[in-house]
Image (tube, rainbow, N blue to C red; front, side):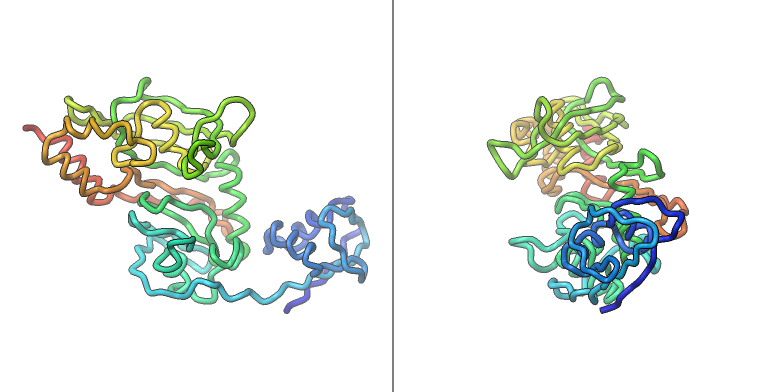
Length: 328
């Protein structure tokens, strides 16, 4: 274990213990510091302090004991990761559809985390829990595209703050390409609602009325319309918030669920019968919701440099678009 000491300067204002610690030790996330306080790893003027909200002021002596990182429970597994960018602080992955991000019941191995542990070794951040080391945001198993992972505490704290801020005060940018049944009107707009777990099916997220749920905002633009018998829209979705299944729920709520989405688009199965045989085969081959995280931008947590990445549509979606667009 490593102990770090500091004395609050005479010019400092009185503030909460956890805020003072986060200011003095900016390379350690505030959430981790709160956990260390509650675990008895922080001393204030020589005495253990268990309350993160206790007030501290000028002249207070602080000591923080930071335990060695616990080895991640998931084992290292060599996976063929598509690495878009990597440095000492972070790694950007282009995730294929079908790859689970972190271990969960039923998916204990073969996840992105298993592959990252093998690739990054001891540098991978343990913040976020041993089963989610370095993960600051996630993509559904059957959603493809760009995802950033932190490799140390500083990067984890900086990236987590940006995702929590949803890009309101920084360069965070997330855009997805989706294939949806029908054509949303207006063709450029914003979908805004509260989302929560469905009371009828806990596996699903639902739009809720009133004060319940979490606020969710999706901006969208119809890029093109494919086909005539059963029109399909290629929709660009820009997230202002990042809730579970947000794009899938929002478009389904508007009456335009994603192609291949068996959870939120089951009622639209009959539309597939109006497609050409070639398009139906491409949709069956897709075997997932037609959603791809195509753009990811953020400020580098150490340098402040704005990083911007783009991922082309994967072959399963481009093939489906080609069949939907084909003249017969």
